Length: 318
Ligand SMILES: [Zn+2]
Image (cartoon, rainbow, N blue to C red; front, side, top):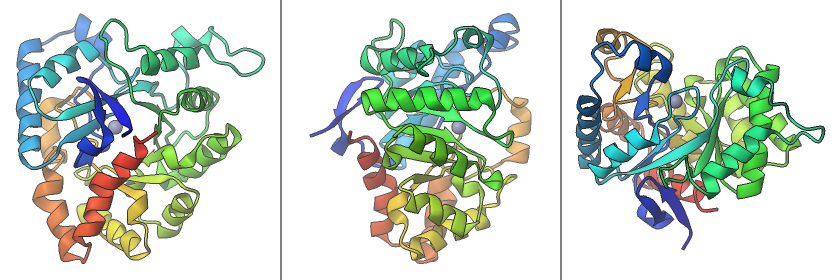
C-alpha cells in the first residue's frame, strides 16, 4: 500500500478518503504580521482554524491538501498546532509562489551551468528529510504562473520544481491563469524537464469555460484543478458547474479534482471585505451548493467519487 506524508505522519493513500485538493489554512505575509501584528492573536487564529476544519470534517471531508509555500507564509509549527486539534489529514507542500521574479534570497544564489538550482535541494530536503525542525515532510510541490506569463523567475522556479519532482517522485501543483492559456506553457516546460504530467495538477483550470483548452491539457495527461468554487468574482458558480458537467460528459471525470482555494485566514484582503465580495468562499460551499448542483445536472455518484477520492489517491500514489 503506497503511503503519503501528512502533518501527523505517513498514512495509507487508501485512508485519504474524500480529499479537497487545494485548500489553504493560513495565507499570510509573515513579515508584515511580525512587524504590524494589529489584532492578530495566535491562539485565537489556531482555534478558529480548528473550528472551521472540524466543521469541514463533519461534512465528510477527510483530507485537505494545503499548497501554502514560500511567498504565502508557510508556517508548519502553526499548522501542527491546528492538526493536533482535528481529525482531518492535512498534506503540506514545498515550493515557491511568485508571478514574476524570485525573491532576493534566491536571486544571487544562481543555478549551476547544467541548470541545477539550489532551490531544488531545498525542496527535496522538505520532502525527504522534513521541513525545518518540525519533523513534518512535504508531500507535493507547488509553484505559480499568472497573467504575466513565463517570466524568467517563474520559469526558474518551475524547472527547479520539476527537478525536485523527478528526484523524489512527489507530485506537482501549479497555480495557473487559464484565461491567458498559461497551462500550455507549464506543459511545455514540464515536458522539456521530463516530468510525469499525470502527477501534475494545473490549478485554477476551472476559472475558464474553454472546453477545448481543458480537454487539450487533460489529453496531455494533466489533472485539472476545478478548485476555486466560491471565487464567483472571477468565474460565477453556474459557469464553474457547467464546465465540470460538460467535462464529465466528455469523459474527463478521471482528470478533474474539486476544491475552493479557500483559507481559514488570508491577509490579502481586509477581513470584513471577504464576506462581501465572496460570500461563498469558504470550506463548505461545495457541500452546500456545488455537489447538489452537479448531481442535479447529471453528474453521477461514481463520477463524484472519482473526482473527490480516486483522483487524489492516484495523485499521491507514487
Ligand atoms: Zn491557492
